Amino acid sequence: MPQALRLGIAGLGRLGRRHADNLVHRTRGCVLAAACSPVPEELVHARDALGVARLYEHYEQLVQDPELDAVVLVTPTALHADQAILALEAGKHVFIEKPLALNLHDCERVEAVAAGRPQQVAMVGFVRRFDRSYANAFAQVSEGGIGRPFLVRSQTCDRLDPSGFFVRFAPSSGGLFMDCSVHDIDLARWMLGQPKATRAFASGTIAVPHDLAPLGDVDNAMGIVEFEGGARAMFYASRTFAHGHEPSTEVIGTEGKLLVGAGAARDRVVLSDRHGVRQQAVDDFFERFANAFEQEMQAFVDACCGRRPVPLTLQDATEATRIGLALTASLKSGEVQVIS
Ligand SMILES: NC(=O)c1ccc[n+]([C@@H]2O[C@H](COP(=O)([O-])OP(=O)(O)OC[C@H]3O[C@@H](n4cnc5c(N)ncnc54)[C@H](O)[C@@H]3O)[C@@H](O)[C@H]2O)c1
Image (cartoon, rainbow, N blue to C red):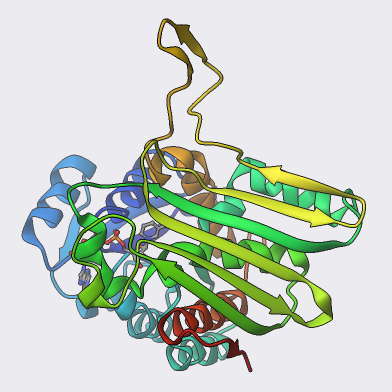
C-alpha cells in the first residue's frame, strides 16, 4: 500500500470547509494533516469537527511543515499567487481555487515557478470540468458528436442572497466576470479546443438595489468573446435570480448542439396542485456541484500520487484570467477590448 498523501489546507471559509470535509470523509488516499487560518474559530472547527491535528495561524508555518506533501489553497483570490509560489518553493504540490489570480503578472509568476518544478502538481480548481454532465458533454464534443463546435453560450446565475454576502465579497473577488464567469470562460475554451481569444465586449447592470455601485461591480452582466479561427462565446452572469442557482452551457456545432443544465430544477419531481405545475430549485453551487467538488479533490490527490495526469493546466487558468480581465475592462470602459 503506498503511503497516504499528507495535505494541509489554507482557508476554512465558505468553500474551504467543504473541501476540508471532502478531504477528511470522501477523498481516497490522503490524510488532512494540517489546517491554516488567521481566524481562531476556523482552527477550532478543523480540530473539533474534522480531527485535524496540526493547526497554524500563519501560512508560512503551514508551508514549512515537513510532514506535508501538498497544500490546498481556499484563501481570498488576491493571496493565491504568492501562496502558491511559497508552497511550490517549499517542495509541496499545490491545489489553487479559481481564479488563479486577478492579474496576468501573478498568473505568469506562478506558471514560471511551476515550470521549474515539473515533478510537483499545480492544479487550479475549475470544478465544472469534474461534473459528470460537463465531462460527458466534453467527451461527445471531442468524439465529433456535434461536428465542429464554433459557439458556446454559458451562464452562471446565483440565487439572490439577501444577506448581501456578494456585496461584502465584491472587493476581493475581482468582480462578476472574474468570480463567476471565469468558470464559463474555462468551459468555453475547453469545449472549443483552447482557441486564442482576440476581442471582448461586455455590458452590465445593477438589477437589485444594494451597495455594489461604489465598488465598481454589477449584479448582472453579459460578455461576448471572439476567438481566432472564428469561434465565439457568449457569457451571462447574475447574482440576482429569484428562484435558485442556474448554471448552464450550450455548445453549438456544425452538426448538432449540446446543452448542459437547462433550468434550475433540483430533481425530476414535478408538483401539480391548485397553484399550477412546479419544481423545487437548486439552492447554490454547493448543491449543484457537490459531486464535482469530490471528484476534483480526488483528481488532485491522484495526480499528486502519480496515478493520473493533472487534468488541466496553469496555462488554462492564465487564459481564463486574461479573458475575464478583458471582459471586466470592457464592462468598465464600454469599449471593445483587444486581447493580446
Ligand atoms: N470553485 C468554486 O465554485 C468556488 C466557489 C466559491 C469560492 N471559490 C474560491 O475560493 C476562494 C475562497 O472563497 P470563499 O468563498 O471560501 O471565501 P471566504 O472569505 O469564505 O474564505 C476565505 C478563507 O481564507 C482564510 N484566510 C484569509 N487570509 C488567509 C491567510 N493569509 N492564510 C490562510 N487563510 C487565510 C479566511 O480565514 C477564510 O477561512 C476564492 O478564491 C474563491 O474565488 C471557488
